[in-house]
Length: 140
Ligand SMILES: [Zn+2]
Image 1: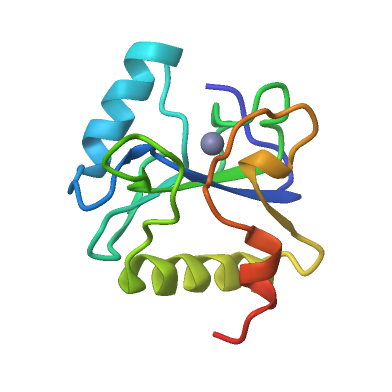
Image 2 (image 1 turned 180 degrees about the horizontal axis):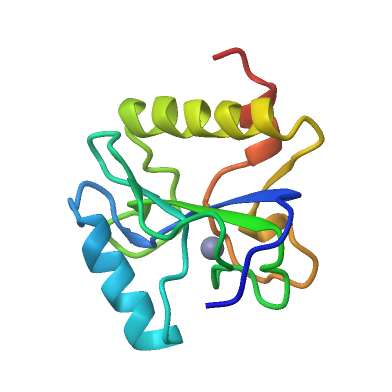
């Protein structure tokens, strides 16, 4: 697998799985491997807030079209309602774990740019179904 390169970005995704469905990280990695030939995300955060390192952050992921160099991908399980419409379905445990992970990388890389998938140019998706900048601006 190609190397990630120096980390400059952290991009947040959702798995687009229905609210409340407890999908294990291994399953998401298996879906991505079937579809893209490799694991897409560096981390998957399950409903209980457990953080699974699915790909070492020294390897390039496959989570933002054309922009995976230096880009750490984090995916939370959920992101759509039961009808399949985009919805911020993060459990409190997932939100807390996500914030902690972002803070860990920010401590390592002070000029890290953190954004949602949909904040990348040319992305016509709702992923990760919430406003990352607004969420980051909130007090923990
Ligand atoms: Zn995404």
